[in-house]
Image (tube, rainbow, N blue to C red; front, side, top):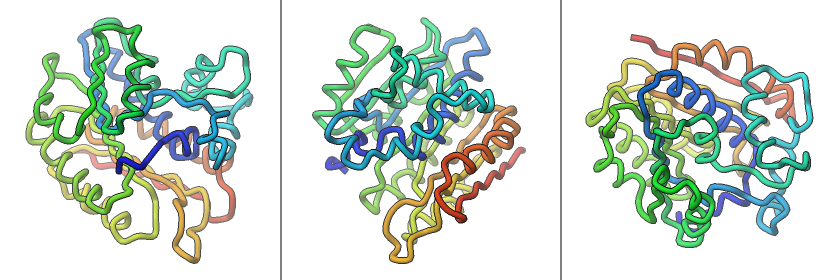
Length: 281
């Protein structure tokens, strides 16, 4: 897991889906005056230079946010996502991509708080640098985000959004995310949880959504975006998914309007498609 550096993948199709939904989740929580916490178990560096050697090596952003950049004909939810990217690129050139904490922060208020965790020693140094100016609003810790959830939940304001977003480079991550979400629901069943995962041909990836649906959550939303037909050799990620516990009641309709647009703009072959399903108590 410590070999993973998100800079290689920043701004790709999976980031577009994840961060578009993240903006919608924090917007909803910010509608009530009472404070909330944003907890990120795998926060990364917080911001990425798209002209860096790492990002330029694969240039995955070109088939992700790059396909949306500069367009004026996008649904409002896609526009809200792009607004955050544009604020990171005030000169109008796509050179920087915000990480998940910046997307969450974009709609948070002065009395809301961010708790960010990252295990990679170099990434956590950059994460601290990127959020140093925010003072006590943001706490950055070098450590295991899974373990931290036990101490943080329930949070003092009794309102929180938790993003669980590991690299899935290790097979045990599939087991750990299920266990972590189960523990979260026992400690803080009213929290909002967003769990990201890759669409891969490996068995663990196929088995993850059914396992998540069996967790003791009365309300959830599950969305996937496939951008290509799975490779015949089984190599590579052909899409991604988000499993959201206690989603805003408006999110299903928002995604129903947005996902066909993302399929059209981000799809690379005839295998591009989306799925959207919900359970409401």
